[in-house]
Amino acid sequence: MIDMNVPVTLSDLIRVYGLDGVVIYPAQAAGEEESASVEFLRSVGLPSDRVFTSRAGVAGSERDPFVLGPLFDLGGRYCPPESRSWHVLGYLPAALIVLDPRSGAVYIFQESERDYQLAHRDVASLVHCLLEFRKLDDAYKAAYPDSPDVEALVDRFREEVEAVDPTPLTDSESEWNRMLEEVLEEMW
Image (cartoon, rainbow, N blue to C red; front, side, top):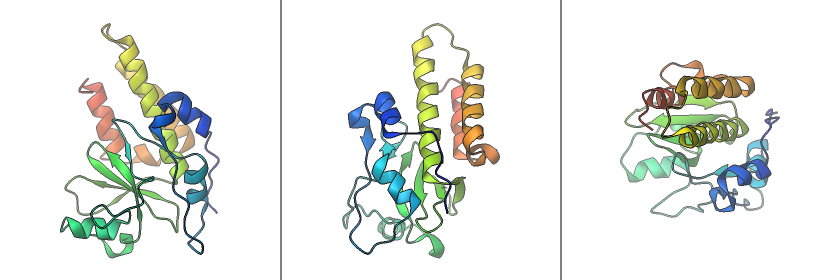
């Protein structure tokens, strides 16, 4: 069973992102696979803002599929066979975020990369990471135009994320580490 004991609630997301900044996962048709991830997405949802654009509320269409295989087929992009049925959750600035509904793991397809990378042990960890990144971004903006202590903000983000799930920051080439480098270089 997936450990969804991440301290994130719908109230937390609404407080930080506002009511319009939270997307609740659509209810599935009867008989579709149930999982802790799907239940989390239905009850807590995903944030959606300039850093992460959620796709969970999109029912999908021929032009904009919700499932990874058909989405990649539209663009003529290679899709690893084992990932064709994964759900598209949304986009970071340079990566596609997907959920394997069977295992509950969250993966990232970085821009122009052929293969995927494990990003989070589960969707609750993803939402926690997004919430902490938003807090980092808000603290940075609140300190501007004075010189914010960017290193302290990044260190706090790392501590908060690693306390819940070290996976997002384990690989030095991960999307989260790339984004943190941009923050440290004050490119955000």
